Length: 280
Image (cartoon, rainbow, N blue to C red; front, side, top):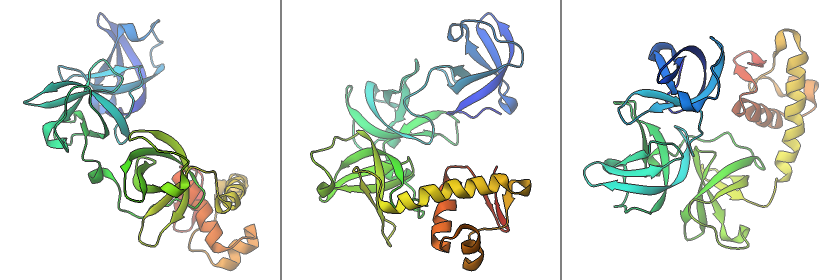
């Protein structure tokens, strides 16, 4: 099944004058223009493509990689303005990305740069951009652990430092005291979780992993190895197991165990069930 706004590995079905048709599941056949591939694939061969809609609202595929996919934030440039519709952004594909008027936080001119979130319009199934980024930043408590490496996108300056999008999901703060110089809006950075506050706020740092994550990382490897070596690739331990059972198996506290399986779950390396943990 093809997902709009995401990369997909779709089976080749047939070739026609416009190009190559791929099986998009319930979305039907999806055209990959001929210029996108050098040679005709074998029938059934999987082709790695990004799926979106062209200027005539038809589903099409491309082997090109956009600057951001649905569900991600990016810093993009306005390339044209339509007063009745909105502005169009360069996102690395032939068809520019529409930022509708309703999704603009302030009026924009050609050449302007701004942070947006790429989204799929629920009514039209068209990929659009939104500059109303707060709407898409999760308020659900994250499962990050102290010292965990994360991807950051700077949103802008605040009285205490710089706000940044963390792993395309949450907002965090890099304090001025953590920096040797200024940052720029839209700057992409590799960072680390410095602290998880009781009020849900996230403190960030650019200065390398902290001790907490250094303890957790080897434990995640041990847990993953133990699951893979267990019968059925499953362990009868979970975040509700008694501390004594966890310590008897891994010689760590229940808190450390829960942090480690949280990291593995976030990385989609394990599945947490009511009676145990297993690999997908």
